[in-house]
Amino acid sequence: MKLKKSEVQQLRNMVTLEKGKPPAKQPYFGHDAELYLTPEYLRGRESAEPVKPSVNAVRVHDGDTIVLWDGSNAGEIFRARTGILSSTMSRITHDDTFDKEYFFFAVKTWESFLKGQTSGSGIPHVDKEVLGKIEIIRFVMTEQVKIAEILSTVDRGIKKIEVLIDKQQRIKSGLMKDLLTGGIDEKGKIRSELTHEYQDSALGRIPLEWDVKPLGECCEVFNNLRKPISTQIRETMKGDYPYYGPTGILDYINEYRVEGKFVLIGEDGDHFLKFKTQEMTLLVNGKYNVNNHAHLIQGKDIVLTEWAHLFFLHRDITLHLTRQGAGRFKLNKAALLELPIAFPEDIAEQERILTVMNGLRESQIININTLKKLKSLKTALMQDLLTGKKRVTLLQNDLEVIPSESGPFIPAT
Image (cartoon, rainbow, N blue to C red; front, side, top):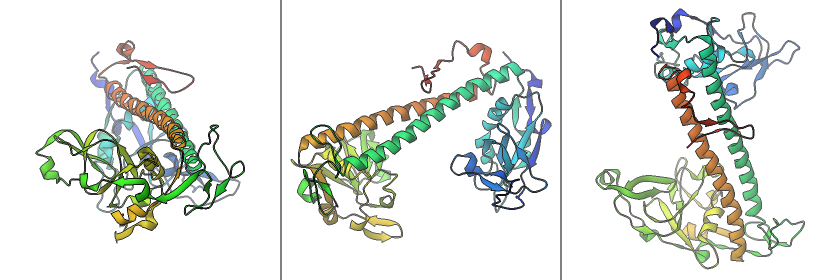
């Protein structure tokens, strides 16, 4: 179905722009206070602050399309909530030939382009001429509504999965804290000092059935297996075997030096201070290579390799590090061998704890992969539907999505 020339319109010919104004007073808690909409609030990262509106305040409503006009992320497109528009943002108002939701998605698809075309030698801002030349398609209203329904359904699915992943992460953090300080007894119950006997240790109170030892007594270090290979050399030896650094895979090459299951923990870097949000250890298995910026650790008889990985995954070890510069630290081998590690003396308990954490981790991976599929689906649909490449009337048999009241839909595979 070929588009008519009249259906493609430049924004300059069909919208008006209204830039937000600074409030008269901020914060303000009087009876006439209104919420001040900032980019961080619309991104869901902050609460909206109450303000006293100025006489020329721009009031926006749920679903209005607004653009971040000034700042480092100028060009970002938002769906408004009811409130007072901040002075760094502008509302894009259209006529009644556009569905509100469709118009938002149609402009949103130009977001990356707008961000790349900002002006200003100081604070970047949206180039009004560039914005005005953006073209969107004015489909008939019924088709606009249908396109918006499809994309909104995908958005709701993405939001549900994001909320679920966030909830799982909070559960994981709390559960990990409980399991790494109390463990699971032989009856499958998480211990506490109210129900079980505890003892003092170098790492604080631990169950009577646990022990604390220096890592060097529980694990072996295999740094002789490391091999530094420069980027230039790796370019000449591309292959299928991973080449690891302390925080992940750096490359794939055509040979391997390490085989088996090891824990990798960084020897140096700036990631050690991010232990709460970034994983400090990697559990790797198979055939691969490791550079000289990660220690290779393997458990002995009393500690499983997987336990060492879990124990140090989000642990603060900064007291054992030496500083190499502003924000850069080093964990040398001598300090590594002295790291205290707590563990259940019964290997079966280590396995019970690992089973629980691995189950939660696998569930997270499933949801993260689902989120990736949904985001890819949204990108493809926006490219097809908002450009007229694929019309809604022709899409019905091709759109393979599974709506679900019990959870977010998943693209059919």
